[in-house]
Image (cartoon, rainbow, N blue to C red; front, side):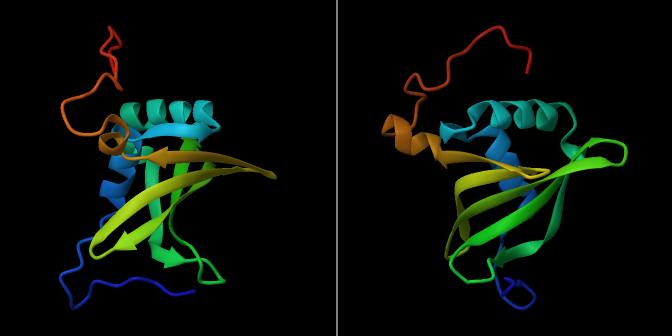
Length: 133
């Protein structure tokens, strides 16, 4: 398993920023969208419950790059989330996440909002509502 390191380069990957983008700016396209929505609510209430585990790393077969995040649900109880993506230069493009709960795996497929609407300016993808979050 290889690990990306930034010790002596201008590599600027941040696990915290990846988590922030995932739960504040990403929109699920397929998969278990409800699981993402629930994790998003937890993140917005208590972002300190999301603890990056280790650095960005590759799967054992070397085919996928991901960040592991421990999400504390209660004292002494957590779920692991793997955030998969592609490293392009110094940027990590999020492709999907997997929430691991006991023997179940809940997968959510993502795309960046600016790719969905065809440009900036909102495009109607994110409806404004009276939601306090």
